[in-house]
Image 1 (tube, helix red, strand yellow):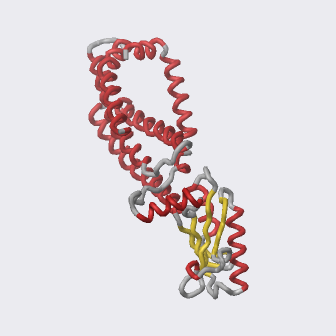
Image 2 (cartoon, helix red, strand yellow):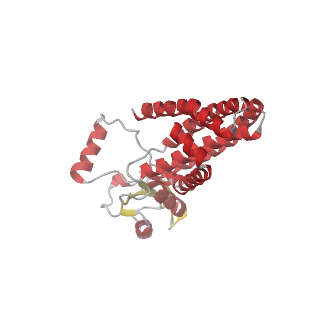
Length: 291
C-alpha cells in the first residue's frame, strides 16, 4: 500500500485523470451490459427432459426457438386468407435482424399440434443467430408484431421475450430502489459526518463501484452467457460494500487530520491502515464469490 499511496500523493493530478478515464470507460461499456444478459438456469440438468434436449442439441443440432409467436387468425387457420397472412408473418419475421430461421404451422406440414383446438390460432418459431443479442432482438419482434397486425391478433412469447422483460424489470426496479435508498443513506451520513462532502464521498464511491462492475459484466457477456440476475447481485454488493469501505477510509482520514497532520501524511496513514483492511476484505469477498 505504501508505493500506491506515495504514487497518489506525488502524482495527484495524474491519478485523478486516470480515475476519470476509468469512469468514462466504464460508462461506455457498463450500460451496454443489459442488452447482453441472458435468462436461463431454470432447468434441472439431471432431469430426463433436459437430457433429451442436450441430446437433440448435440446429435441433431436442434434447440428450442428463442421466440414463439402465436397468431390468432380469427377464422379457420386453413383458409386461403389465413395462409396468406401466415406467409406474410413468417416473411416479416425472417427479415428481422438477428433472426436466422423461421418455421411455422404452414411450413411444417400443418401439423395439428401447431394449431389451437378451435383451429384459429397457429404457432410460428424464430431461431436467432448465434451471438445475437437475444433480449434486443426479442424486444424488436415484440414491438413490431404484438397486437393486430398482418390480418391476425399476434402474441409474442418464448425465452427471448421473457429475458427482455426480466432485463427491463430489473433496470426499472434498480432505478426505483436507488431513488429511495440513496437519498435516505445520504441524509443518514450527513447526520453522522456533519458534512455534505464527507457524506457524499461514500455514495459516490459506491456508485462508481457499481458502474465499474457493470463494465466487467459487459466484458464477461462478450465471451460467455451472463445471467440477468448478476445485476441484482452486483448492485447489492456494490452499494453495501462500497459505502462500508468508503466510510472506513473517510473516518480514518478525518482521524488523521484531527491529529494536525497534513494531507499527504493523512493519506498515507489512511492507506496503510484502512486501505490495507479494505484491500484484503474486498479480496476475501471476491474469492468467496468465485468459489
